[in-house]
Length: 414
Image (cartoon, rainbow, N blue to C red):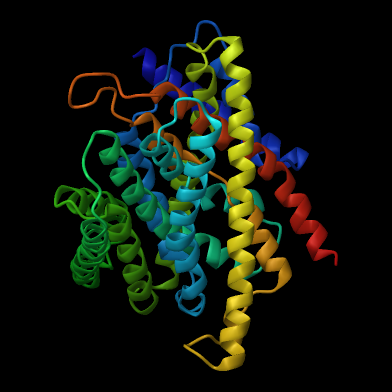
């Protein structure tokens, strides 16, 4: 009963602070994270552990489904080249870049452990970026690219993470096997999402006059889709994304306008509560992970986290502006299917670069690290990896989160 009381208490604080943030014109994710850190230091508050399985099952499916359902399919298709570049290529580049820095910077970080840390911090959290920029009037192109990236990059990061952890535990890395497994995960997720999307469309087409049943099916299906995909060892993330895209396309022709509005109102409340709870939980992690760390250890790890944050930001900026150049060259030469609408300008590129914040998925992956190896010995550097991951997430969410609205307003004024 005590745990339920704590959850209700946290949600009440979250709702109240969201209203306060709106009044004082402060991004509510930042305020909620700071509140979470403060709550975590309360002496009588029990430890609230972030269960990775709960995060991936309870938080991820509805957030992914909502983003996919509401994304502009035409805009997504137009900018697919940039979205894939950020969601796949940049994830692997960031994993490698962070791994190199961690290996040479942090004592005791072997190459496999460095790649584990790189994979954990490789994917950005566009939920945070979109929450922070909401109402600032960023372009539809920019928001679509950020949302599209977040729909795919979690799958890329999870694949990188699985292979890195396997390397730590002694499993040999074979490139062709890794590539094949990545293709199976992504392709299998696509198939599962498409099939369940077709089944849901078939059902809704026959019951859409019953609004409660229709909305209930739409609320339940993302969780079912994720579970089915994970059960057969393909990407639940991609499956939910494909489900959202297919149902969004289907709903435009079948759903009456008032049903769309009713469904949207329910989803808006659910997403608001989940987002708010996520940011509070992120803040709560810092006090918990530093309890077993001495003051002498804490300061160096904060320094490591800051350097890795800067490295990740520089890599992202470099890749985004290189993508801007590549698109311009391809358009001029008439190669591929690059249209004028797919081109990036300086403002879009800078906002996309600065929106590369890490979030709940990075924390869930870090905390989900195995406690022991197959031999029974402790997983090496586990506490250090978790602590650095939490520090980087907080640096990006608070630092970039506070400066992103200012940057958007400044660019709009030009």
